[in-house]
Image (cartoon, rainbow, N blue to C red; front, side):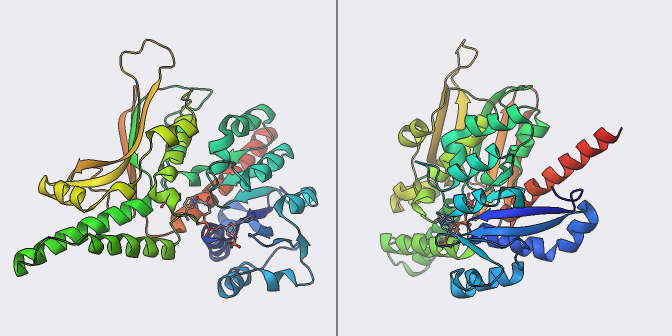
Length: 398
Ligand SMILES: NC(=O)C1=CN([C@@H]2O[C@H](COP(=O)(O)OP(=O)(O)OC[C@H]3O[C@@H](n4cnc5c(N)ncnc54)[C@H](OP(=O)(O)O)[C@@H]3O)[C@@H](O)[C@H]2O)C=CC1
Ligand SMILES: N[C@@H](CC=O)C(=O)O
């Protein structure tokens, strides 16, 4: 932090939906941020797949976003006089360690290597920088390492509430309100169940709406059964709309095949201190996507008064006497009652039910249209660093 928290200088890794929306929010809320938090959030570094740019004075956020949106590249920003160019984000950071405080990783998901996020996050934490993640991959590949760095040094921090269910404060509720984390479990997790991916929930809901409508038309016109092709086009059309809204992954097969949901379930379980789970095994053995949902499954669900949702589920194996019992884990399309909590999670909604030994069952649901709540969750994490720091300063004065 510089000059008593008056300025936090940010480096943005990735400049797509999330980080552009973050810039828009910072820009429109700048006055409020100054008044309420005494802080000026200054974006000094930004990178995309082709450029890594640093401006010590800070970028003009409105023009940065509008340039990227209009030109699809940061080429014209790179040619500005005050801007330094680097080969990639790592080089940009390593030449500017004393010129920024916080890294925001909103780069694309790579569940195998965690890159490009992982190397940047590792280096930033080593250098005592604060890190906020929207990108799940670094945690999927190196959760213990990255969160232990935080515990051991006390001077650098990683926050990741935006990685899981957009703006829904799942991670915050676990680590703060259920007062449990991997090192200090106060209560014990008995079961997690939820819908963690809005793209697939949107597609499934639209497929059901379409099937219901076609059924009505069929009854009215006696037109024969619904053709599979109609479902196919609903699937594709809804996926295109999810991409347009900025909620689908850069590679949407991560949504469709359930990998994004699996990554979120892994992060949630690790945040709860669940041991002996391996992401690769969860993904390869216990995850199925919605690509398997076809016309006949939808028709059969409708006949039973049910709907299909992509459900993430985890609970310890019953009857286990071990202190850390093995976990039953699944990510799979499931039939649920249309009027149940999960069944009423529709369109781009996401939800979670957390059952613990002390708090019984806590249910949370979010109704998110697009990317704004995720970007707001990134801002929430940035501001929580500000609040933590202010409290530390006040304590030091006492
Ligand atoms: N969108 C959402 O609703 C949510 C997204 N997330 C996560 O946040 C992350 C970002 O999502 P989103 O903004 O939608 O993704 P986008 O695909 O819109 O943006 C990704 C950005 O990363 C850039 N990029 C690609 N490779 C590199 C690289 N090697 N170095 C630096 N930048 C690179 C891309 O560059 P270019 O512009 O040149 O293509 C693009 O600007 C993802 O990991 C996603 O899982 C989490 C919660 C919700
Ligand atoms: N692609 C995800 C958003 C990021 O986590 C979704 O559709 O929920």
